[in-house]
Length: 210
Image (cartoon, rainbow, N blue to C red; front, side, top):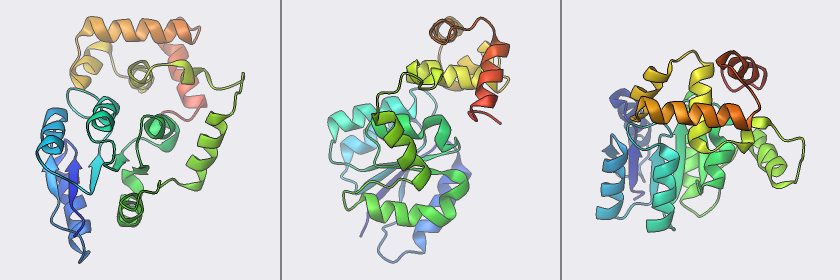
């Protein structure tokens, strides 16, 4: 039986994933985790065949959790299941050690296949993500500006571009307003920009936000 740990802060999403996997005879009933610390605790306490991990969680980000899991349980396949499009986080997730990336919009049709693939030790990537990864490997002086950002800087930039205030972002990702402001300032400096409006224009043109 394939033992799955499902980590997401939305109960409806977790229930939906469980319902999809329950239809497969070779899947055990998935166990749930609703925040970053609970994920790490469950990974420490039990052996799993695969972790299905949301990239946006209360407290530490999914990418932070992924890196720690890679250190503690290097052989555990981690499949990212995210509301964010591939253009936003997929390459970063794979570089951080994820075994695959599935968007929530495509989850009903792709999730079971993706899990079956990563538990065999293979990667699950879409053709478009494979192309993006190939481009990321090449040395390209003309690479997109946002690729110079850290994961947190990139996360803050995308949230600002989607219209959120620094205070709202601080609440979303459980950081202080001062810390979020610091990430914003660093992102602006690295991308050679001055205003939130420039963030928004760039993010829309690059397909990072709708």
